[in-house]
Image (tube, rainbow, N blue to C red):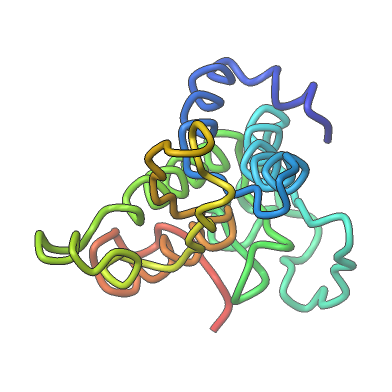
Length: 188
């Protein structure tokens, strides 16, 4: 899949505004790292626009076929868990499936919501704690990568989260009970 596939999504512009609105770090001063991290979210738009199917990172060879359902099913029966989004990797979603583009979009929305939410302090006192008061995982951007105007300008703290970190937040939220069981499926 390519960026053109993501652009076919009917809500591409809306999701790109959300993706571009997240905190992004460019610690080396170049935008390559930022572009890569943004594209990791954009690929979920391409998955959704393309529809049902199995997806994997380009560097993953899905060799554990015992996890996959037997051939001969139709529709959602072709996929584990009735076609609900299923990550076959318990840590990441380097190999996953869903029975519809809507299912991939549902997971993208959950990840974007998690990415938005993780930057907020847990409690009012956590504002004083800075990064230690953040809700979840992620990476604090070095001040040099977020200086909005150069010398003398106020530096805003940013807190980047990747798509896979956001997916981890979704998983933990489900396991804690703040998201409904079955929000996504992962092997034990």
